[in-house]
Image (cartoon, rainbow, N blue to C red; front, side, top):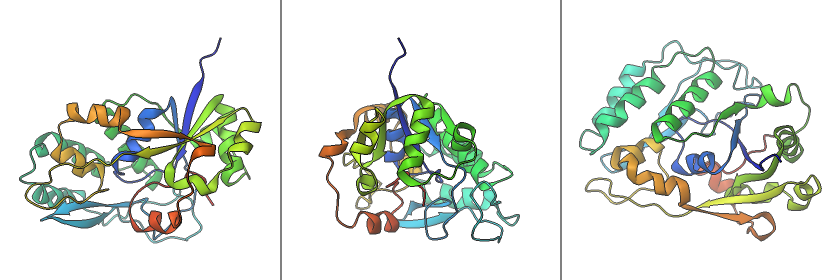
Length: 263
């Protein structure tokens, strides 16, 4: 008898927040979209780290190109200086207790020279998962679905079907995007992951939540993060999940993954 498969599907991001990695750890198959449009105002290639108690945005710069291109067709700017950005991060976290074990990860990810933005982000997610000892395989959407005209919910359901998934998990911010009955008709249980508050000491400054996973790693030993990754969240059945007002606007203002279905 085939074991049930739990799946999640997301856009890739640059060093996303800890809830993204909780989602990866919570499923058997994690799929990242490569055929989605790059959005300038999103968080695909940027995030935030902490400097002197204040959140600072850092960016993986791109070559100028047409706005309609997918992230697998966008390229990292030739002018990007990873050593300079690494030095800025190292300086910002010079007093963080776990900087020495985190900076090699930062340097490995930012210094990677993939051909496209997607390759760079995929590499970063794989390396960070290995650093966190998350064993969930990370797969690419186009390798599973090929060419498709499906969008939003139907695309998610189709990929789940191709994976043989019996459960689909999405971050709680995407509750307005999905109909539990539509998933149930295809034999798929819809669940939403709601990360529990996770506060930690960030030096002498007041706590700033929802920063890049880099901030979490700088201030916390990886051994202590295992419990947070494995159970620092609640899984809510689709029909029981609240539809938070303003979910879309909240998702655009902070770098948290809120949805999986591309436009």
